[in-house]
View 1: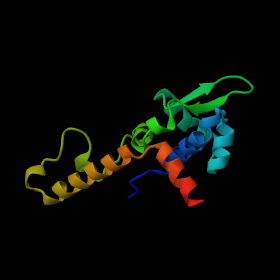
View 2 (view 1 turned 45 degrees about the vertical axis):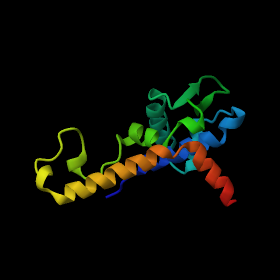
View 3 (view 1 turned 180 degrees about the vertical axis):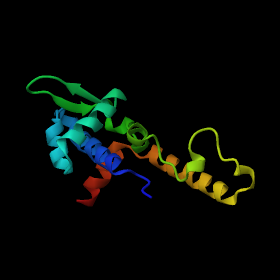
View 4 (view 1 turned 60 degrees about the vertical axis):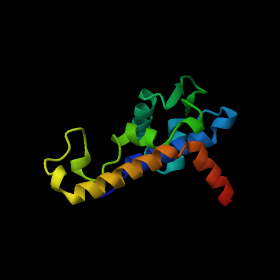
Length: 140
């Protein structure tokens, strides 16, 4: 079981790439983003459509057009991107939605997974694209 789907991983890397170029206002084409991320152009377009609809990226039309972040890198969290691309992170089917699990009151597994779920969501909500860029520059 993957917590993050492959496409979400691609989308996260694409957003970091856009964040890297956001300081100078540089636009990046879908083809360039897909090439840099080593995934198909068609998949890149699909991911960018979802991100655009959620206003995490903006598109500029025309021969010199492309994509840029919809907000500052410090205002976009990993959880924002994950929610758009895969509808959140779910440790177990029991934890999806508001219905809960029929065995919730007597199930210790559910209790432990619920805590883990809250921890993971909280952790991902705290990490911004800006923070990722800063940690990358410290490693170099």
